[in-house]
Amino acid sequence: MGDGSVIPKFGSMKALLGIVAGAGASYGIYKLLSVTSFKENKKSAYSESHGPKNNSPGGIVLQPGSLLAKVSGLDVVRGGESQAVDVASSDIISRSPGSLEPQHLKMLLSLLQGSPNPSDRAQILITLGNTAAFTVNQDLIREFGGLHVIAGFLSDPVPEVRVQTLNALNNLSMNLRNQEQLKVYVAQVLELIEMSPVNSDLQMAALRLLTNLSVTDDHHQLLRGSITLLLSLLVVSNQVLQIQVLKVLVNLSSNPDMMDDIVQAQAPAAVVLLFDVRTSSAVLLRLLMFAGNLKAWRPSAQVAEALRRRQDGLYRVLLDESSQLQSKLIQLLSHPDGEVRAQVARVLL
Image (cartoon, rainbow, N blue to C red):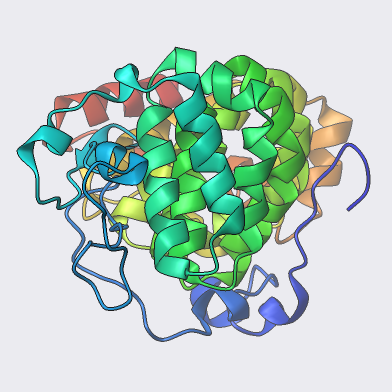
């Protein structure tokens, strides 16, 4: 990866887009669909990954009174929701993450680095993710060098460990000072999204982390090369993942400095088909916010003409006079959801 940009290796993904997106786009999604063991029927956008249970094969044996026993029963914070880890003692469950002392965090980081057991690593990462719900612990983990220790497990060979690594980093990234250190892992996170099965826990956890990192404009330049990947995911993923992809796209399109990269990106022709009454309101609202941000951009006539010549560019797909978007929006003016109608009116202005 070159400095100042992140361009995922799309490789052999070109073959399938012609089928999914139509003849107008040439960018493929072979890698995104190459794994068939997709995980479906998840409860929500923030509960697709599940931490290992203490009674699972090869799981951790919690010794009474040990540090891990004292902190393993905390609720895991995952992008707005939490999931309780099974424990034997109600005393463990009632312990607050905020009550952990600095030496406990140091010990957990040391245990993480020294554990040869994947189940142990996943459990420790869950515990660190719990503690990272508190600002004081976010700062302490950074000061102890823990951000890089935890991020080192993004390349762990076990998928569940990678998922729990991303979940922990997601909580840690709610701290702006932590983001300054975590930004160096954006390229690796994008690669995980590209190489993981569509709708998988890994993709969801990685997208949640990118959502946090893109809330401010500070790190948008690191995502300049990711627009095509995000747009391709948008047309092949389920509703839960679509919402998460759109959160990132809305964040990026809110930054005028990113607009040139966004409108020039290769885009599946099928993107425009999502502007439909059959698309869920939750997806439509964010899709319309994204389109509204794009419509607010006003290129010069010369720039618009150059973009119009790119048959598979996002400008041609959504913004050009030849795009189906205008007719799609007019149809949505009769949508039963009032919020959707309001967003449609905003885009049409």
